[in-house]
Image 1 (cartoon, one colour):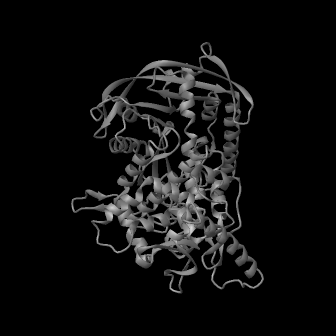
Image 2 (cartoon, rainbow, N blue to C red):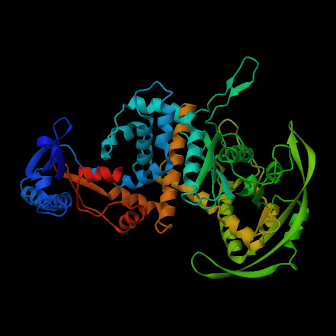
Image 3 (cartoon, rainbow, N blue to C red):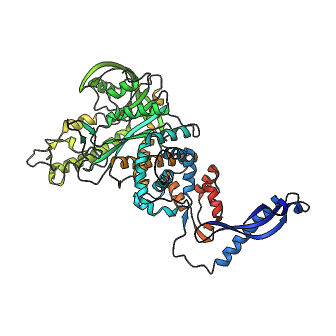
Length: 586
């Protein structure tokens, strides 16, 4: 019920109490509950009649709700169709609105001949991916769990994926432009890593080739080194994140391509699109190549100014001089640190500035020598040495079992153990271990690796930063590992129920935007709660329809209460009318 002011006799303002409701077709209507009188006459009695009767309406609503609930508590039956709705997604919607993607889609849609709303479909895919991850079909079928009315068909959902894919870079740039100041984002340091997602299909996607044999378009899903050590075709993703762990951009590339070449294109594109200045790229040792360090250091013709890098460095894969320097003990410094469990441990470290001569690969050959000055750091801790020994011992047990029982293993199952076994060969067609081989442990390799237990190394272009500063920067790589875990575990990015390149790209785009939103929410609440707990709370914050447009809320917790205060949302009332719920969503 609300106060209505409308012109009456001779234009005089007349006040009355009006009740809003919806008819059987869902159309909004209203009816007069009580007539009050003309405003002019009421001013003789009340200082501010409008304010007074608005307060009366508010109190009457509270009393009516109580009366309605008491009246129906013993008479109402369970409805045949579920009226339960989730409102936890209003928290996600609040952040989604900050990204201003709705405005982007509205602008793009003006040039398209389509009769469905792109933004509505994109919102449904985002909220569902975070809270109820499923296939596009199941997501569409479950769309009524939300309060928003999503009016489109399942075919529209699939048609929209082509458009989303074509807007990928616009979406990334729009998100950056609308969050960089609002969230104090810092891209001066950017973390980069790759992961892959396997597809349960038998064969690789074919390349599209012209009559002269040139590749016009590469197939996406191809067999390659899998993080899960599976033989299935995979797609690889490269993800770039800012200093605080908020995603900046992503690229997909075929499963049979090396991740080493994926860094330069995404860094160049992101810097240009976001108008970024100097960026220090942080990545693990798999991305530490001559081409990457030279490109980032600005020694080639593709860059106009020097960027920076902090890379992990493989000690076992380094040259003889580097290995000898690592094992030389007389120049190490000792330090202490507190681990994540609160225990103090001692480690030693040292560094040097070194002119590393590199050669770029051009036309399949190495040429153009460059001297790249970099700071090289090496660390040793007994705790890390014990961890490496334990991990290697487990692999050696597997290697010994393989030697004694080769029939139990194939190429995929023997992952990790193969490097410690002499004379091991596989059938290229089946992946099975060939028979009649004289298998034995590679003792020399084991002894060589053991010499470097506990050591790890970092190299950087940032010569002026201290060893501790570089080490702290490098340790931030865990943020990107955590992001991949969220996409695979919470968002269930795979299995992917689409198969064209455009639809696969669009699927991963919705996962990317979902990741941005949940990480922004995590930042808003100062990372006080894990992503798992946040999502569970939002899923539980639901309500059931009591009567007409009145809803009963039956769950809250500390996370909901904290989010309510930070985002300025009304999430505490036990009863809410649909009109008030609309206010929360808008």
